[in-house]
Length: 64
Length: 388
Image 1 (tube, chains in turn green, brown):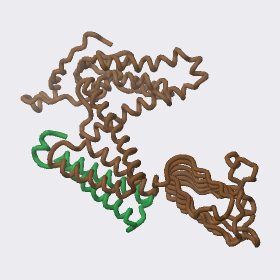
Image 2 (tube, rainbow over the protein chains, first blue to last red; image 1 turned 90 degrees about the vertical axis):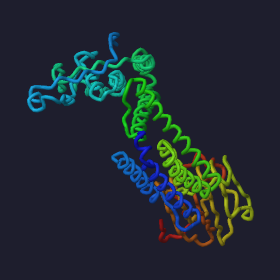
Image 3 (tube, one colour; image 1 turned 90 degrees about the horizontal axis):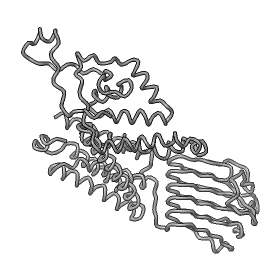
Image 4 (tube, chains in turn red, cyan; image 1 turned 135 degrees about the vertical axis):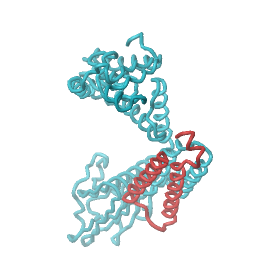
């Protein structure tokens, strides 16, 4: 994290992480509403995908 | 440790002959090479060289090498190999960076770690009794793991590896470890909240955390919140996938009905041990369905030999053991369909276990079912195909 990035716009990693978490929360909510049944077989890949997206955003944000 | 260390940053090395020819006016930094230090050494200068190369205080490498000697000696082999294969600096191409001034905190840390390392050597007889592995497993390994993870967490969160003075590095590692601990607390609290209040509350918390991060991205430095927020989301997802619900309470429950009419359709427990002992009840010939809903823990059904048991269970993480049959892992779907022999009652057990174990076993009326292993049985069932 640097002061430069703060002055040029939003922190990309935080922004993307927030969007990913909101999507994650919606998935959990749909599971609670019995729209589908969330299983461990899906949770593992979901968490990994979320982590990957956030790391990608973090890396790309640092480059810019 | 030497006393005459200075805080001076190393001067830029003078350009080599080739550089002087090609760029006479620009001072090019010398390529950074990994060499053994001649000025900052305790043995072969490996730690000093590594510290200079990575811009970290060499004491950290010395502590790591010393600690690794207790953990099987791999670090000693690595040190020897480095001593042999890494060249010693000549002072020509690599400027000897004077080691940083060591803070009192680092000195104290070094003393503690050395005491921890040397302690077992002085207590060899005790360790022979208790086992060196116990010591390593209980103290050194967790400490080393926490320090390493703290380092990595800091690196991950800030995007920069901890650099600077020893104090700066230690503070960064401590902050990284602290953030990890905070995330662990959030993980447990999130799981507990989701299990008590239901997954809807957990999902709402995750969405709220995401919104906070989005807002924070425009306001200031909130990147450190990502890890705790992810921990929250993961814990809630874990509880949702396991379908854990603490509605049934926490503790040990043992039900021992004596009449078929006393058998409930459903038994619930949030966390703990739930036992349904049916050894003293005569089941009706038409059979009986019973459901065990356990969030975290075990559900045990004890039946007499003359009862045929069919079973169906969903287990998030754990195992199902029905007489001699067993299945375990994650997302366990279990089903065994049987028909009872003529005259034998049929018990259909439905199990819903979030994290834990579902057991069905036989035991005699006078036996303590706790001491009875799960063995092949179910002999009151008609022979036929069973499905699992």
